[in-house]
Amino acid sequence: KNQVEQSPQSLIILEGKNCTLQCNYTVSPFSNLRWYKQDTGRGPVSLTIMTFSENTKSNRRYTATLDADTKQSSLHITASQLSDSASYICVVSAPRSSASKIIFGSGTRLSIRP
Amino acid sequence: DGGITQSPKYLFRKEGQNVTLSCEQNLNHDAMYWYRQDPGQGLRLIYYSQIVNDFQKGDIAEGYSVSREKKESFPLTVTSAQKNPTAFYLCASSISGANQETQYFGPGTRLLVL
Image (cartoon, each protein chain N blue to C red):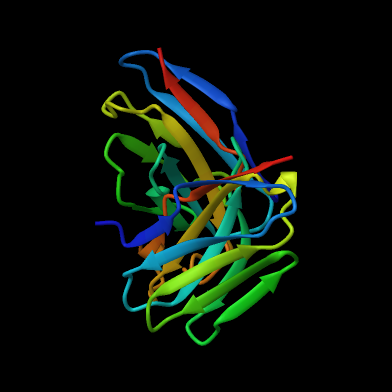
């Protein structure tokens, strides 16, 4: 069973609209949660990082929320632009100094239509 | 993609052939990582290194080998023992390897089997 589940798998919205992507995780104990943006054929780029004590973090038109009690996070994109078309990956880390304790979700593929 | 370069962008492997993927970084990071990305799946860790001349197996190391002779370089060899090598390979680096650090990814290499 995946320890980081993302939904939906894919999403198509019109330019200018808002959308929300979901991430549920079972990783425990928990250290931090990141959202990455990955353009097609490129490497992921970090958007936000949240620790256990944070419940919201914004980066321009991206706002991430975290509920550590329910083990859920969301990424809200406001006023979408064509350049937002990409895969968005949720990544959860456990509190150990080991790369093997970083778990990647399979991503949500977002398409913005003009 | 920060200061991480990967080459080549596309690589073709024949049956029984070993191939080497290049990864170089100029960020002065101690830690480097190799991930494999398959459609519909999260990134999976192949190998990582937190210091020169030392590296650790990740979750799917079988059929792969690495070396870390220089801080800037972390080449990955896909050996003939890897029976399903077709995938998108991503190299990343971080400051020291602690899992709360941001990882910076290269642009990736797509490996195809002839």
